[in-house]
Length: 123
Ligand code: FES
Image 1 (cartoon, rainbow, N blue to C red):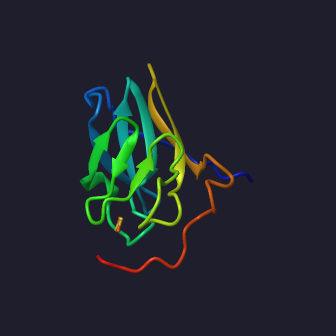
Image 2 (cartoon, rainbow, N blue to C red):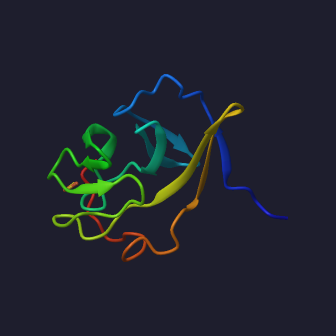
């Protein structure tokens, strides 16, 4: 039996361009934002030190971590440089007349160096 990684989410039609929200799917915190009319979804957890990126600032396609300022591209989860050393997971999110759904399987097989490990806990 194949287990689906597809999950339906609440209506996000009120999420405007530049807006950020977050949700939890299967114990994963996920940041969802809208840029240029399209939804993007990445793991809501900075790869540097376990901080919610949804509390950061979104500028174009870049989300800046509120703690030390690392930035990540919401289109693919890649990071721009230190203090983060890896990207974050990125998920396929779709929005159509039937609603919003997200696939929590990694969108990229290898977003940069792969899934982050070993970050330290701050919350
Ligand atoms: S916790 Fe995000 S840059 Fe340090």
